[in-house]
Image (cartoon, rainbow, N blue to C red; front, side, top):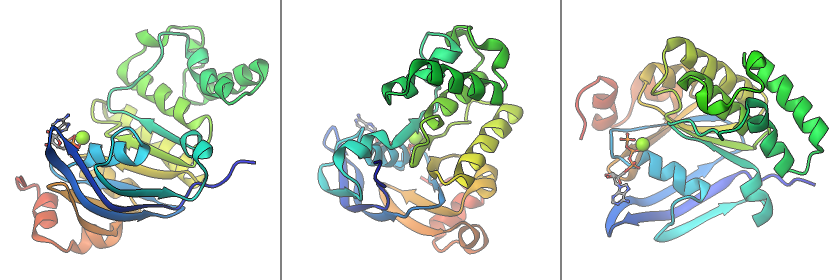
Length: 238
Ligand SMILES: Nc1ncnc2c1ncn2[C@@H]1O[C@H](COP(=O)(O)OP(=O)(O)OP(=O)(O)O)[C@@H](O)[C@H]1O
Ligand SMILES: [Mg+2]
């Protein structure tokens, strides 16, 4: 049986790269539900925080505790990057791949992949090489592939930065649907409007530290620190 992996807890997490401190003393609990948006200026450490939680970046101090056991922890998470990553194989193969890795029978996997492709508007492109899709289509595919295994937690690092309004709306709709179906979401963005549309709570990162944590409503109506207020006002915050 699949075990739950949330909540997860970061205790006194530090990350250094090339001997430079990138994240310092991060203490944070990620509960079972929520749509967390990570905000902060360029270079603050947002990407590093997500990569560290997902196990892609090594910590130099501190502990990360998940509820579940080791085997489940990797399988129950997914990560979507700013530049969509798709395999140079057909659309349907891209979607079926994670299912096959999870030991789902091939005919069922292909059937589920086909349905998912249709639901994201790629029903006419099932056999097309995903490498030739547009940027927006690739990102929809990358997200659908991440979601097809129903991850308990989904990390996204600026998933719509390179997309136009229509593609962004489609991605946001997919994310809200996943969230409403119980997927825990942790996402970075530089788009404040997007953060307002999606977030239930905000982590504001500043100079490698967790500067402010807040419900989305409180953050947007009455943020606590001069740095986050300046950031929301569109001032230059370094
Ligand atoms: N391999 C590395 N060696 C040295 N410094 C690094 C390395 N990788 C990242 N950094 C530094 O870590 C800091 C945080 O980077 P990170 O990508 O996490 O920031 P970010 O908040 O995601 O920024 P952005 O908004 O531009 O995406 C930056 O100052 C960056 O230059
Ligand atoms: Mg980043």
